[in-house]
Length: 102
Image 1 (tube, helix red, strand yellow):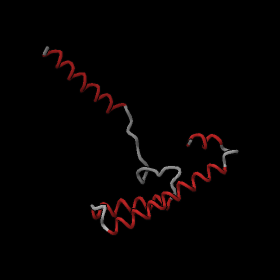
Image 2 (spheres, rainbow, N blue to C red):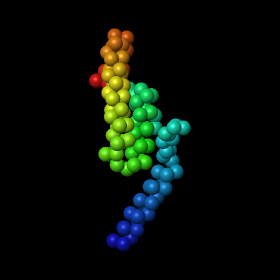
Image 3 (cartoon, helix red, strand yellow):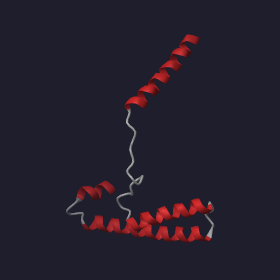
Image 4 (cartoon, rainbow, N blue to C red):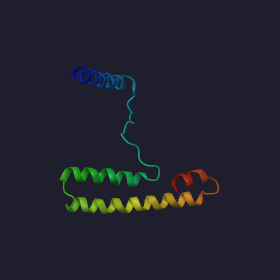
């Protein structure tokens, strides 16, 4: 029984070593994660700013955070609507992107 447990532990360590050696890590770009396709750069900047303000105050009820959060929600809604309108306008020429989102 003890030998079986030792063999199992050895196998586990061996598998982890193989994984670390041969499975490539996902390398993020220069700026970390990329924004989603539908999101505008203005909305992306708002989200990053909201995250910074929250990290500074650590309170979701702080007036500065509340103001930024509202602005971010507005920008995200605008970006989603613009993206959906753009897809709807180009449905005849680009059906694949339309049905990928639907």
